[in-house]
Amino acid sequence: MEESPLLHLDLRAPLRYIEDKGLDPFYCPTEDDAQQETLFCFELNEEQAVRIDPEADHFLGKLLFSGSRENNEQGQQIGDFELAAGLYLFTQRRGALNKEECLYQVLEQQKDGLWEKLHLENRLFIRRLFEDGSGVTQLFRPYSR
Image 1: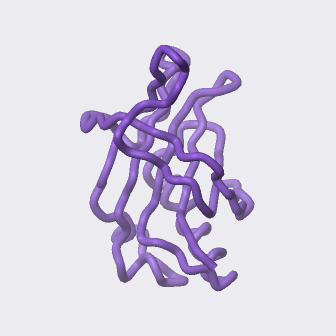
Image 2 (image 1 turned 90 degrees about the vertical axis):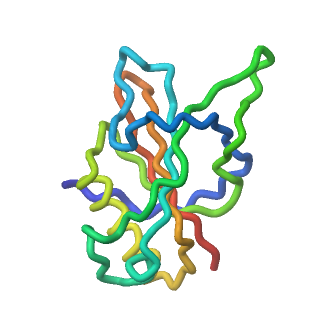
């Protein structure tokens, strides 16, 4: 699998989402549902989330949130959950990454972040959207220096 470079993202404004517990975190929108943008928040296994050699089978913990992004008539985002403004390790890949591909990217992201001596938080956000003719998978891992 092609590796994505480690990117630091300073998200300046939060992205808001409406909860929908029926969504699959490893499904990426297709052209048929191109307007749908989804966000998933996982709690990570506390032990694995700080290891330079984490075990993929034990890395993801509980799914804390699943939802979709919607706007009101004025074009403002609505919802009761947000991907907060702040610092994130960020990876983006074209396509619908399955669970194993997402884990591979996140584990590589963690190794690089720990190598840079970042304090990684115990959360992973997976954002799925459709743009420029294909699905996109984005991985956000909050951190502090």
